[in-house]
Image (cartoon, rainbow, N blue to C red; front, side, top):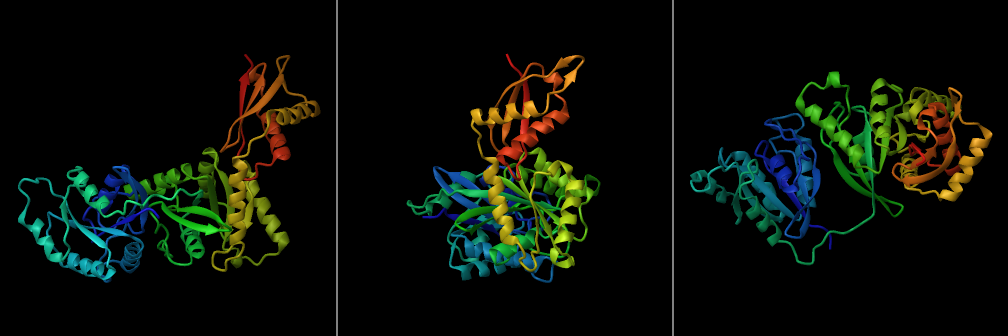
Length: 437
């Protein structure tokens, strides 16, 4: 059976994200002492006493007139409730029962899911405030007092959580390609995921910067599963005005690091910007397989010649990404979206490819014969042999007489030779130059 799913829900600022991070064992959700920070559904794997389960953190549920994003936040919470097998309903033990808690409880009762009331922010368990017990008025049988911030009574809470799990429930082990979708704010990252999923998995808004956390979504296409990681739009550091946006940038970089491949989205109307160079540079330096998706191509009146010109312009501005395939897409119309997925799968597969040492050295030997290695102060570089030592990214060690004699232009020539003969489309190639002992 599938992994049990546990959703954490409740009104804003009751400590849902703090509890989520505590249960997941790491700081996944952004945690700030401000309401309405979490707006989408955030996922993580968790484990307790050998039982594995999936956690969902959600935005706070509020009255629709109270905040601009609220109707979308409420929708995300409702989707999480529908998706979950078990629900942790978090309330504030300091503040006591509120009218909004009662409204959330009414929503949960309609779901017919297993609900546990988690009374957070309890610091003294020997002298618990009387208002802790008033939460029984919400109509749920189980009530567990905790302090998520200080980790108090978390073990007892987890014991209650796994007590509802069927003993046969276990995590399905599946091959999934992790794809980080990155780009400037408002370039269409969330809209792309929503198009692929067919429903609103993440909040989509015309206001830049809506997505603050990295959101995971698993889809299946041509019998291949993709875990799509939607990230907050990365901005220049000078425009990171507060800690929340700073943390969002960090999460986008971490999303790149934990991915198998990266879809770098560029706005067709704006072309390549300095920020695009910065963002794609993160993925390049991380050694990730990559595809560039030029979105909003439906707004460009273009023929094949215009597409070729645009492609040349991208490679001119992103010279370090000349190995990356480019697809001209439209999330609005669905143009070439399937092509992007196929390119991503192929690029990730290429990044994991290994070349036999004998065949590799035949190619390197021929390359050296065609173009002599450089000299420096009368000494010529000698290349003895080459071997592949790693994948993702493909990494090669070239053994030479003196690494100081290797010129960057000749190193680039060797990389191009390897790529011309063995492919590695969409994947950077790493060369390590070492002296033969």
